[in-house]
Length: 342
Image (cartoon, rainbow, N blue to C red; front, side, top):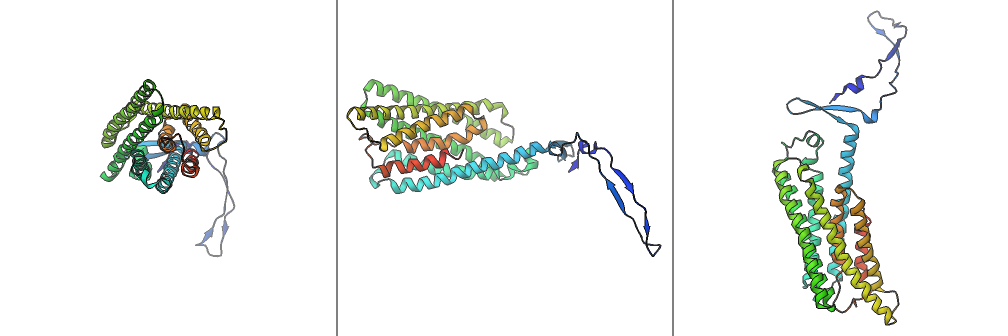
């Protein structure tokens, strides 16, 4: 690396030569130099610029703050995906162990298990991307991906495809659960809610599918995805709407059930109240994050909240009468593991 002109703009050193002291032999002399260095007060070493060269020798400048931001972003996002990976594996084990054998053949259980397996694989691929050739310092700043092997392209594309598959499984699970929740309400209201559920789910899946297609094209071409940044934002917005919609349906139905229990004199704090509180948190926390967080953070947030939402609202048809240990413990664990990492 060649130091930039910014470093050479410092004031010249002020050097004071001491007296030369001659040794016993005329052929060997020892010199003692006392130097006093005066630095320019305008120079900030933490914002200095250094120069790199492209493969054809063309120089380009990179600043230390840009390099720091790039390194910290990679560390931050790898921690995020690693936390999701561990939480998904633990939750998958808990889901299998705490679900009764006769319930393991239900479509909702199968979709939730597949979603957790997909999210686990997806997070592994994401970590491989951010620690692979695409994320090397020179490749990133020079936009030179000539040494990236085909396997890295395949890993990157597979990660985007698995995100789509994850979203499809979770949306199907949520639609099925909405259908179960609405079995006791009037037909007109039930058909309206189911129609809105399908519309919201298909909208989120449609935008994600378009993003996967365009993103895969740009990955193969190794080009910047900036022209379709609006599509990524739209995908996150539709995913946010889907989260809030399903949370609102589940929390509203549960709130009405709690109100009916209060009218019957059942006011004891129990599993239904715990699920209601956690459902409200699932509605409020992702909503606030998607409003105030940056677009890059939204991509990190929504998959975990979708999984939490899918597992949290595995309601039974008999009015939430599952035992406390089988219903609340997994959701509480997921709440700590997937909501507190951000």
